[in-house]
Image (cartoon, rainbow, N blue to C red; front, side, top):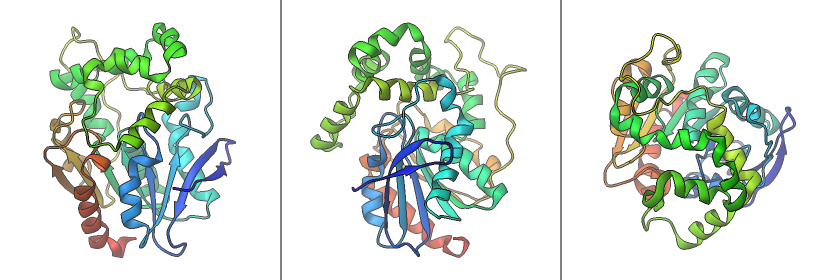
Length: 303
């Protein structure tokens, strides 16, 4: 997919796919860790005849700006990038679509967008709501154990490993044999992705998403109870039409992340995908495309 270079008002430069009719409703796609805009390659190919599809390589990734200081990756700046990107491309309202870390930012963009009137819908794939996840990581042993990799990513004693081997070294340390993602990624995609992990500046940019996050991941021997301080953030309900696509075999994010979600997102549709791991946009593209088609059609009057 051809990319353009877009300079945001904050000075960050992003490489961006911008395809589809300019007068069509806009979908902004946010990828997760440790991928790129190509996370959404199947959905963009499927939807770009009917929607304007905008998909950046977010800050810290690939050819986009990669500031090396942790403070450049706080959630407010990552959320701000999305609205500044829309401004730079002349986009008023849009639907936000996100997976993994892109989904975490998409929750924030949607919440901000319902206040400023710029976001009309949200599509989230295997990215837990920030309130529910912050609670689950304290109370659910499976989620806490699955989240210990974040502590590895935040540990600066691993920086020498990253400088020597790029992102691949710390991924191997954090995940070991679980690093393999099966046979569902095309060989050429896998080769390109692993090659990109060798970029040390990008590796630290990607890790800084974790290091700048306010989320605390307790150690396995800490109490299994939500603390009086430092627990889930206080956020308003998200009232926008929201589709959550959840692959049920995600080893990092168990389906308990869906429990109670309707209380925080009253206008919610959940589509569960069986026999699929974390990377649902490309592991099960037909299921994701079908879910998005139905949701975008049903909510078209809100676009």
